[in-house]
Amino acid sequence: MKPIDNLDIRLLKLFLIIADSGGFSAAQYQLNMHQSSISKKMGDLETRLGMTLCQRGRSGFKLTSDGLKVYEASKQLFDCIDDFQVKIDEIRNVSSGSINIAFTDNLATNKNCRIQTAINTFCNTHSKVNINTQIYDSSLIEKSILENKLDVGITSPEVLKSGLKYIYIFNEKQQLYCSPSHLILALNREVTVEDILVHPVVDRGLTHHVTPLSYASEHLYKSTTTNMEATAHMILSGHFIGYLPDHYAQIWIERDEMVRISAIHGLEYTPSFYLTINEKNDLSYATKALVTAILDAHDVNTNFE
Image 1 (tube, rainbow, N blue to C red):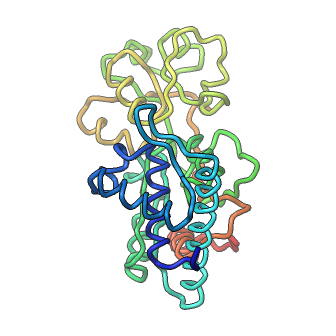
Image 2 (cartoon, rainbow, N blue to C red):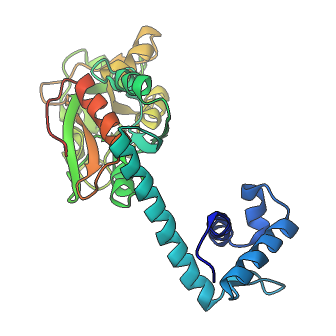
């Protein structure tokens, strides 16, 4: 075989897409090509490599033993190309490519959260970078960072996980809320844990204690959620008591659709939010710039490298 050239690179990229898609038919939509064209290009690649890479026909699509080896080698090749691009960008002090970042939900109304300011600052000086954003619960963000599916996360963890680096950036106050018609308001005084436990509660935390009510294991009437949106729906139903951030609940307070419960000291709580990265990974030039912008926007002075 001749030394690898640009044509081989393009054909190998096509081969990876076909393999990851599970066949020619599934890949045609992603490649925007007819199956006949895909088949011809695969034939060209097999001819250039001098081996059969896949079996296709009535029995379905399957990589040959040689195809599996070429598939793994091709993945390594494109990883090396990506690493090379990152290093060249760092040498040139140029940001390009993509950053994958995820947030927990309902942070936009928190005045302590200045992610928007950080993104604006970053985009003004790194306009060629694509920022791919997702909204997940903290546990899924942490898992995705450890699996290198995300570069950066903004999390409010139940417990700090090994392998991740957490940098505190802001917090929020959460208190108990209910609908205006809820029976607990008839007490007309500061409520206690015992007062609350006779009513249905929507709480958070799947595997670890999160809210002060999470420790009340004797509670029999309980719903569990992982995000604020679901919690708000349960409270607005009129049936449940639950925690919401003050900034997020404010819109329903103003509409007279939700009431903050006057509770004894200790029933409110203040969760912390962290910029979260994989402590074993070397961040790309672009990701470092975004992390710096986030830390600067929150007046955090720390060496994250």
